[in-house]
Image (cartoon, rainbow, N blue to C red; front, side, top):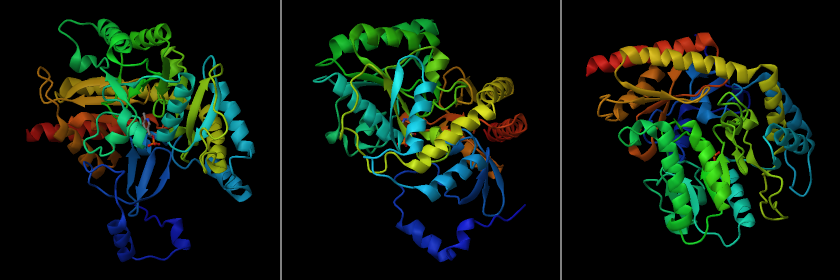
Amino acid sequence: MVQKKPKLNDFFEYTEEDLQAGRSALMRGWSSGVEPVFKIFVTAQGASLWDAEGNEFIDCTAQAWSNNIGANDPRVIEVAVAQTQDLTHLRSNYDSIPLLLMAKELAASAPGRLKRVSFCLHGSMAIESALKLAVKNRPNSGPLLTLYDGYHGRSVATMAMSWPHVNNDFNGLMPRVVRIPQPYHYRHALPGETPEQMARRCADMLRDTIRYGVNGKPAAFFMEPVQGNGAQLDFPREYYHYVRQVCDEEGVLLVWDEVQTGMGRCGTMWAAEYYGVEPDIIAFGKGVGGGFPLAGIIAREDLIGFEAGDDALTFGQFPVALAAGLMALRVMKEDNLLENCVRVGEYATRGLWKLAEKHPLIGDVRGPGLNIGIELVRDRQTKEPAAHEAMEVYRLGLENGVIFGTSRYGGIGNVVKIKPPLCITIDQMDRVLNVFDQILTEIEEKR
Ligand SMILES: Cc1ncc(COP(=O)(O)O)c(C=O)c1O
């Protein structure tokens, strides 16, 4: 075990008391109270993180699903340092070179008519950009439409668009939003209903809501192609196509929140490619900056675009993150990370279904690429959610060198997530599967 000394120590001296004072000062509005382990990590590389004692952890969360190309890629760090030395900040009245190059690359990466790009730093703000652009193109519109258990961020507007947050004190300030049931086949199918039939039924509900359920035609329907926060849920393939059809017929814009599914997580650059559907706007974030804050939207070229002032944010075009993002795109290609994502993702999914043969706790395994959710149940017949057990997987994972993700939507919280950096190797995935196997055995033996 190698003790890791943070580089920050070369610049700042501090004591354990200083850190404790920082802990007391922090309002932890961001992190979940369900995962009470406030651990300090000091370094990261690829799919691994190390704590101050030198313990290595395989990170199946890619740190909030953001380190898609791997943490601290030296090529990204090098270009970020170079850009930092040249220019860290520029007023949005001016263009930087990475701004223009990244806009070109992202426009080229997206399917069909998705050719116009705008940037910001957070997924929540990207969704707000999409919201503004939708309303600009559909003025005087009715409520926005989203899906049950969708998650779109934590700005005031995007909280309203997400699943009803338990302590959302800001509801009164919100845009009007109507939520539509999503095809969650494992849990909510009618008796005998096939995934395809459920997809049709849910798309019909979308159409009926647009026609009869709201006052004023909605500007847009926002959906995550794979719901991350909401149970790591992908939908029957037909659903994506039915939704596109309904939106076209009803004149409602289709916004795909690809903040999590973009940048290769499904084994294609965008989930839009994976499902063969062209949304009107894609929102991106998380992995796109190669570990730096970068988000934004890619919109259909024939939509009315933003005008000066519509979307001005002081740090919205952060040259360092844009340069890092450019290099992250190159690393994806150079290292064949999409292929690796498909290969290791399929390997993991096969391994998990094999584990399901011996662990009754595993109710369902789902998701394309390295976008994997495992729904834990106490009983496969009743599907009683095993939420406590999912938290135990998280806790015991940390004790065994693996950081598992968990889902907490709607208070159910019984889904374990495996969404590591796309550079994870088969050996590392074997370690994850072995630890998962061992933990489930331990939990099942205690019951
Ligand atoms: C699907 C989705 N949309 C939007 C967001 C918000 O992104 P950010 O936290 O960068 O504002 C997230 C964050 O988890 C997300 O998963």
